[in-house]
Image (cartoon, rainbow, N blue to C red; front, side):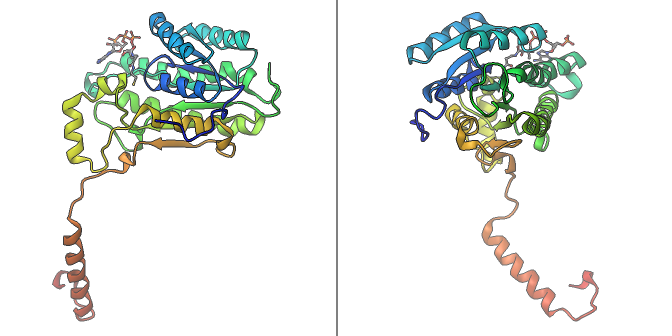
Length: 297
Ligand code: COA
């Protein structure tokens, strides 16, 4: 689908994306590139990075890949510094790297819990921390009079609770808290906008095939009235909005992009039934003698 944004919405910007070589991260890399940004992607698998970089290059998008694990502080520092050395500045950091698997709380080892917290939550903070010196207003390599921007990808799981996702829910809650706290501190001190995107179920991603195999998705459609699969494009457009000047007054927001799914719950009564029932109940209470105990209504 074509983008509704101008092709130069991110012209001249340099974006570094963790997890930017596959899934949602790769679509954000592609759309950022199509809107004028130069791209650096960080990931653990060289082969994935290489093919992502050549796909971006074939679209005429300047791109470079850096192998690294966000759990490793040295890797995070090296990749952020290398992005700066390669392009001369850094304007946008997207934290899209994530780890995930389905497991019940009782079967999850503390190390399994910690692993996802390390990738998602600590990894996000580490990358932000390393990028600060380049993103802050007046920071290294900055020519623009404003600060850069950060986008953290989380989820909606922790808005309520999610079966077999205690580790991921906790990790995404920590990411959202990090987004808001950095927006407060770094927005005030350094003119850096920090926002988040909380994707719902997005088709054709590693996350979906791991977490919601086909049999689960078709069941979900029955009991979740708003259940629809999103597209990677939906998330990327939200990212272009938040990273570009279109979002210049948005700071500390986490935008759910899930078609309203997190609000979804089964309808307990058909609409007609509620109309009838509500009238009857009202009439009864209007006609009831004053002082009659509730039990007699
Ligand atoms: N069920 C229960 N526990 C699991 C598990 C599963 N499916 N997969 C991993 N774990 C546990 C391991 O048992 C281990 O804990 P232990 O030492 O107590 O046994 C801990 O998690 C770490 O596992 P390990 O395989 O060593 O971690 P890793 O660093 O190689 O891999 C993962 C990290 C587990 C998050 C892996 O799924 C991954 O790399 N994911 C990245 C890609 C991804 O998930 N993308 C989807 C994005 S939504």
